[in-house]
Length: 271
Length: 271
Ligand SMILES: Nc1ncnc2c1ncn2[C@@H]1O[C@H](COP(=O)(O)OP(=O)(O)O)[C@@H](O)[C@H]1O
Ligand SMILES: [Mg+2]
Image (cartoon, rainbow over all chains, first blue to last red; front, side, top):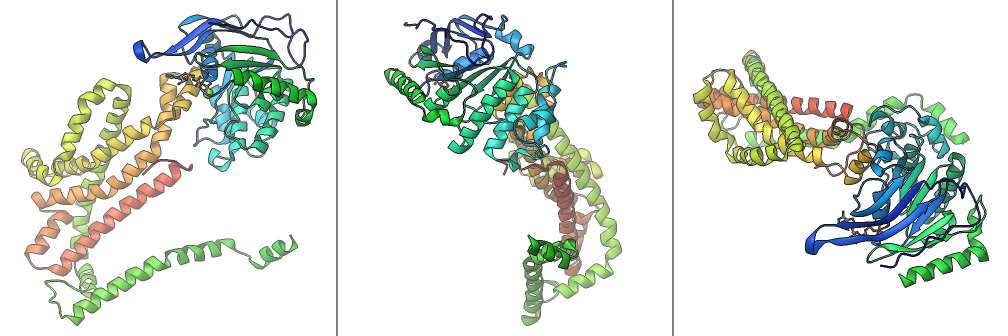
């Protein structure tokens, strides 16, 4: 099993501090689904460090194990070998301490709750939580001021995903895990939300791990891109993206950006 | 813009138009009913159908006037039986559905029995229950309850399980307890399924009560139907049947109104 060496960015950009302990540390993990002949090895020997405060995008072909890795970090999938620590704790402990939030591809809003009541949901379950954001302010942060009482069915796909991001932020998580959150949206909405995610990331200082299968999205958002190869899922490269922050959409028209995406495309072809 | 303000100045009362809209909405149905009643009267006149065989609408209307006390006195027992049967049948179904989603063992033990009970025609069980429970209200209530029970059980189980896997994962990330998942997610998502079943039950419970009254009773609309038939009092028979239909429609309307109050969101996948 080839595990590529971790490449740490020598240049500090964006929110990351090179000296801080990693927010998420994945050490040589395997994830296997099923048993016996039907067993599927989704991840084999994966190691990666997510620096605190950074925005790491995870890129790879469909079925290579991106969701599985994110779910393992979120304590939604058990690992068969290796170790994951989240802020120095086990994923389970980190989940119970509300250290991270998860944003799904489908917004998973409760259809009977208004936007603001959906944002409140995390505060109503899983015990009492001292530190939390103000739901109304969070809806404003994601650009939904005035739509607090709208039901999910009255909102567009993009707006629903904004609500689910506000809901993820309400617990003031140190880490935001996002599994193709904009995958089901049209390109124009996706571009807009990409820019807004960068703004929110810089305003909140949260560590973000963002799964995508779009090369431009991975390059535009990420301070690092974690490229995964499939069968079995393994780390292909942990590539720093040396584009200055704050980034705007037009950075995608620069030669520098095209070079990065060309490199990523080549890596994916080798997968 | 100016045009719009101008118009709203001319139209002082929007609610009047809403009412007219609603009337226009119902107009085809009202006209169809009036047409059918007219046709019925014409057929009865045209072919000189004897009254005992098939009374015309005028005869039936007359029967309503002449027998209003009798109809009224027999209406109440049937309403009482149907309503209590509705309450008990649905209550047991809901509680059993909740038990089923909490315990696979309970579901596997009792679901086949419930299916079996459902396959016995109600008309066949009715005499047995009358033999066991006597001639009072009890067998009628039990039969009305029995007829409500199964559709509600099936729908409620389906509704409680109709939660997206991603929503359950969200609740897990939030470290929600089992009872929080039940009250905040499962119960809510089951409501559209429950009301679909309650609407069916609101009319079948009347059928149950009437069928039970046929077997052995001196009161109720069912007993009146039997008596009117044996005495060739056809106009009274028709009037009784219409009264029973009116009872069922009223119960259906009550359930629909409650549904609109309780569920103000659009549910998907409910039939
Ligand atoms: N719950 C599961 N049970 C069995 N196999 C699974 C499960 N989840 C994922 N897999 C398998 O693991 C592999 C990686 O899946 P996934 O992480 O969803 O890929 P990606 O998100 O990169 O598209 C796939 O081959 C998939 O079939
Ligand atoms: Mg995936």
